[in-house]
Length: 295
Image 1 (cartoon, one colour):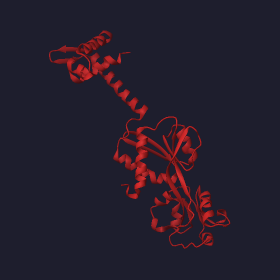
Image 2 (cartoon, rainbow, N blue to C red; image 1 turned 60 degrees about the horizontal axis):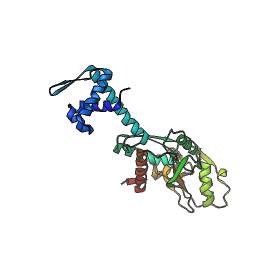
Image 3 (cartoon, rainbow, N blue to C red; image 1 turned 45 degrees about the horizontal axis):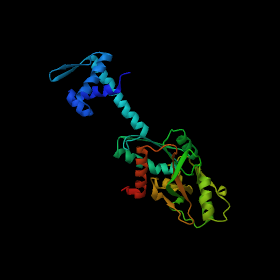
Image 4 (tube, helix red, strand yellow; image 1 turned 60 degrees about the vertical axis):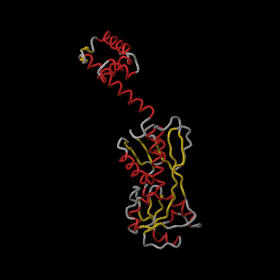
C-alpha cells in the first residue's frame, strides 16, 4: 500500500507545478516534499521527470495521480456519509401517514427546488410501517400519530392536527339524525376517527357503526371525492382536507369539543441526525408555521 502522505505530496506537486509551491501548499519544507517523491519512486519507479521550468509525468506517475485523486474523493464521500456534514446535499428519507404526507411532500419538493443537491425520498405508510422503516434504517425520519415507546427511537412533537367532520357543501346538519340521513363515507381509519370525534360532538348517539355506509376509499387523496359529490359525510385529519382540490364542494362542520392529534417526529435515538435531515426538519417547521404562503 502506498503511503497516503506521499500521495498528498504527489497531488500538491501536480496541482502547483513546482516543489516550492507544493511545499508551501502543504505547509512543509521543499526537502520534505522531495523526499516523499523519492520514497514513492523507490517503491514504484520514476513518477516525474524534472526539467527546467517543467515537470513531466511518467505513465507510472499519471497512474498514481489518478489513484491518489480517487482515494481523496472517496475519503470526502466517506466523511460526508459518516457525519452528514453537508446540510444542502444528499438524500433525505422520510415516511409519514397519509394526511400529513399530503401537507409535507409539496414542501419537501420546494426544499429540493431551492437546494438541488438535496434528494427527497418520501413514502406514505401507517404508524407500524413508519416505525419499522426507522428502526431498520430504511428511513432516517418518520412521522407517527402515536408516540413510540421503543427505547431505540426518539420522538418529539412536530405538528398538531385536528380531526374534522366534513359534509357536502349543500348539506345542513343540526344533529345525529342528519348524519344518519346523509350516510358515512368510510376509509381505513374511518370508524376509529369518526368514533373519537362524533362520540364527543353527539353524546348519547347509537354509534358510528349504526350509520349507513355510502362509500369507501383507501386512497387518502380520493376519500373526499364522494363527499364532494354529495354521497355522504366523513371524518378526516385537517391536512387531508386542506389538500383536496375542490374545497368549494365540501364544508367543515365546526363544533366542540375538538379532537386534536399530536404528530411525532421519530428517528433513531442512538445517533444524531445528519445535518441535511436537521436542515429539512427545521425548514419544514418554519414553512408549516408560515401557513399557505410559506413565507
